Every structure is written in structure tokens, then in C-alpha cells.
Length: 198
Image: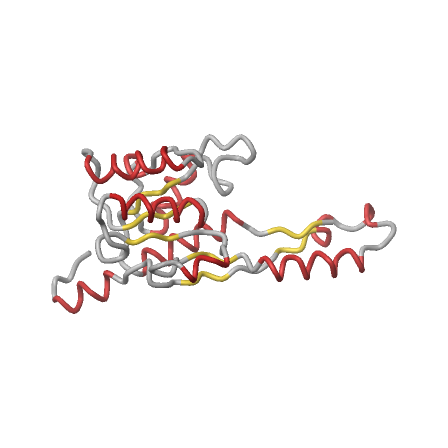
């Protein structure tokens, strides 16, 4: 028996939320070569590109660098996108809040403001994210709730749990997409200006 999050669906809904805010050209900071999972958040790179297309985001592979969890690698990646010959973009979607914090620090080092110059979206719900400047938008996994559910499951698992149907062995933990100040609604901003496009 286990408690888990449908990370693949959660990340899809995260990108959908960004598209609703007007961000279609999104740089995805994802470790697709992560040896501990099938790609990143359940996606292979090919599946991820298809998902972006389905939700209305730009599926250009040039917007998806394969990065590892290393401050210097993330900093170099951000600088490459700011200075290099890449498709235009308005936001970074990050594998986790910790990647997002590294991206925000890298943007600060090159004197760009979040979200005025570029938006940043985290993923996983690091509790300290709400205290950043600006507060970090994220998909919150509700870690406290996961702990509560796990204890409840431990107290109710029958001694013959191996005979339980597979569907009842897995409890799916809820998550919430929280759009804080690190993600700017550019759809609303552009409609106010009367440009009619994003």
C-alpha cells in the first residue's frame, strides 16, 4: 500500500495554468536524464513535447534544455537562454521549487526582475516559497496531508493487504496549483493594452 501524487497530471495542469495566464513560450527546466524516474515528472522528452502541444504551449525542443540539479548548470542555462539564439519566451517552468529558486537567483544575477521581465513557476510546494521575493508560484503537494494520509493508511492496512485489489492499495494525494507573484498574467496585461495577442 502506498500514498502517491500523480506527478504527470499535476505537471500538465501546471503548464495549463501558465498557458491560461498567457505564457505559451515557456522554458522548461527539466532533468530528462534523471536516473531515478522515467524522464521528468513521468514524461519522456518526446511525451513532454506532445503534452505541451496538447495544452497550447509551444512544443519547440529549443525551449527545453536538459539540466541537472546544480546551481552553476542552471545559471549557465538561464544565461544561455537570455543571450543565445533561442525562441522568444516569457516564463520558466521548473522541475521543482528548488530549481525555480536557482532560476530566480540566476535572473537576479543578470539584473532581470521576476515577474516584470520573466515569470517563474515552481513545482512541489516548498513551504518557504511563499516567503521569497516575489513569492514563488508552485504546485503544492501538501506534504502535511501526505504525512497524515500515510499514518491513516498504516493504521488501517489489513493483515492480508497483499490480497487487496491494486486500485485500493494506492491512495492518490491531492495537490493545488498556487499562482503567486512570480507568475505574471500577461494575457490580462496585453488585453488592457489592446494588443489582442500574447
